Length: 129
Image (tube, rainbow, N blue to C red):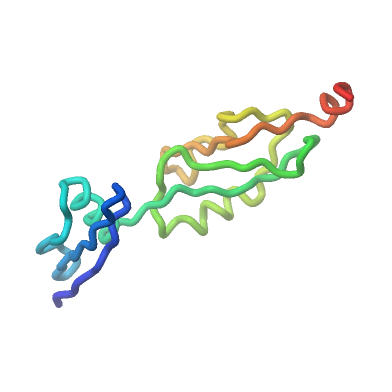
């Protein structure tokens, strides 16, 4: 069975409209890209889409109740829900600094999750006032 998938490339500002033709899950052609990077993006987006995961996790003893976090690399789109579940029960102790690893090897994907902001501890906040 032959099908076409249309992809809007986000690799550069041009935003090429790319058409990927597949037969039984195998790519027959990629058309509409203006560069090699666009073709590779379309190939990955059709065969195994990946996304960066950005969310928040709970902070114990912090000046804020949560800290924003992100994966260091994109993860398979189909695993986003499982990744969110894995992070939902995670709680870290303040203080947290930008770039601190809050989880190593998320879902055995070889991708770490890091803090994207700093959160002071309540004790430190109180001592500064």
